[in-house]
Length: 236
Image (cartoon, rainbow, N blue to C red; front, side, top):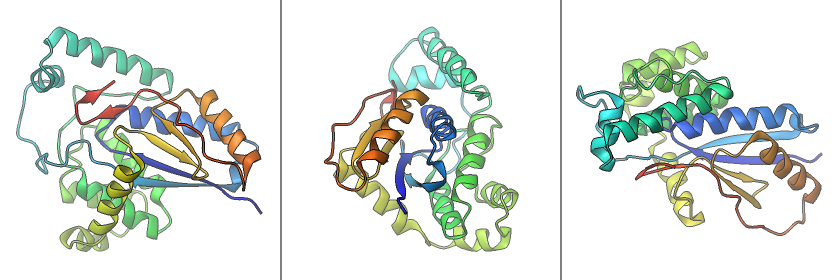
């Protein structure tokens, strides 16, 4: 039986990654072979140097303006546009609630969740916590609570986070991303042959899924499809 592998690199602190996840889900809903699809979420940190929990700061628009040298009005326009785009895909992004922080531990938790068979649920819970609920996803107590909500043992999660378990897995994902040439997320690698960069519309993702399915197992690699991404210098 065929299995169609989808490897996705993304970050929790990435609005386009949340949109991309929804669009992938929409594409899979229309994909006749969705039961034969295996999705794996890989780590990518937009700001590895960020503190675990960032100190109190001005509003999100002010932070964006200061970080990227833009006017507050321009930054607010970007936020408003992102909010509207996300709403079309059923997402309620609350940039007024976002609490900046380091995502390394969150990525370790996603690796742990993969071993427990709930990686997708953990990824979804973390994205919603960060982008909609204003949770401090760099806080290990918060992470343990969120993990419990998807069925993981809070005490076991706390023990994992207090150690360095899965750190190598996160770093391996990021090294793999560099080797592949990924500079922005989300990035979808379908059947290890087709690359889709950015939060492409669901119909574009569906076309790639169908092409990859028909090509299994002997189609040659093709050039990536480019779309909107978040990178270290901001979201395009």
